[in-house]
Length: 317
Image (cartoon, rainbow, N blue to C red; front, side):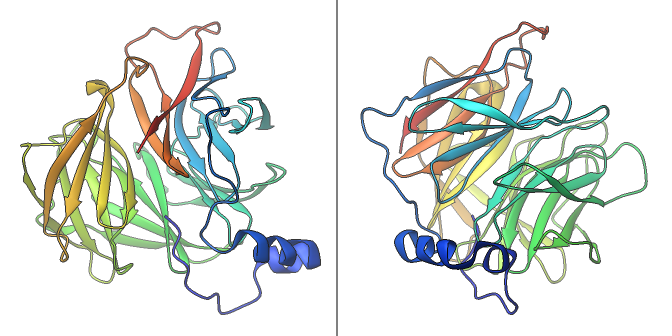
C-alpha cells in the first residue's frame, strides 16, 4: 500500500491537475477511499473473454485496474457498476502481471514479466515509460509495491528486488540482491507478492515455493524468514495485501486467502483465519476498497482460449 510520506518535489498530479485536483484532495484525502461499497455494488464483475488476468490494483477512487497476460493490456472497471473498458490496448510481446496505483502521482505501475516494468497514466492508460530492470533473459517481474520514493518489483526467477523512482520518468534502477535467510530455488517461482512492513521501513515478500514469508531490509537486502504459527506454509502464495499488522496472503491454487497477525517486529505471523469462496477459480492477487477485498480469478487450471471467460470477485474483510 502506498505510504503517505510527503513528496520533496511538486508531483505530476499537482502539475497536471491544478485546482480541480486540489479540491479532490480536500474531499478524498491522501491514502483514503472516496466512497464505501454498499449492497448495491456488485461483488462480481466480468472481464473480456480471453483476457488472461493475473493482477488487480485499486487506488483511492472506486476503480479496479486489471492486467492481461495475453498482450499486456489494462482494463479498468467501475466498482460501483461492474462496467469497464480497455484503458490500454497492449501490444505484441507485452505482459501485465502485478499492478499498483499511485494516487499521489496519478500513475499505474505494472510488473511486465519479461524483465521490464512499465508506468502508465492511471486516467488515460498512456504508456509513459518502460524500465528495463534486467537485460538477461529468463526473468519474471511479477509484482510491485510502493515505498517512499520508489516502486519495488519482485523477480520470481532471480534472488533480487528492483526499485525504480516514482513519478513516471526515467531514472536509475536499483537492484537489491536478496541475502540472509533467502535461498533461491531453481526452475520454480520464488519471490511473488510484495507489500511494505507496518512501520514503512521494510518489505514483506512471499516465496511461492515452498510457501514462505520474508521481511526484507531495503538498505541491505537481508531477508529474514518470518515464523508461521498455525499453518506450516503459505504454499502457492501469490498476491499480498496488508492492513495495519494484518497480512492477507492469496494462495492461488488452493483457492483461499490466509489471514495473518504480524508481531511488532514482523518476525512472526500467526494465522487468524482463512477465507474461501465458491466463486474462487485460482485467485491470484487482491486489492482493497472499503470493507471489501477484490480478487481476480486467473483460472490457471483451465485451458485458455480466446473465448475463455474471466472475472473478478469481492469478499468482505
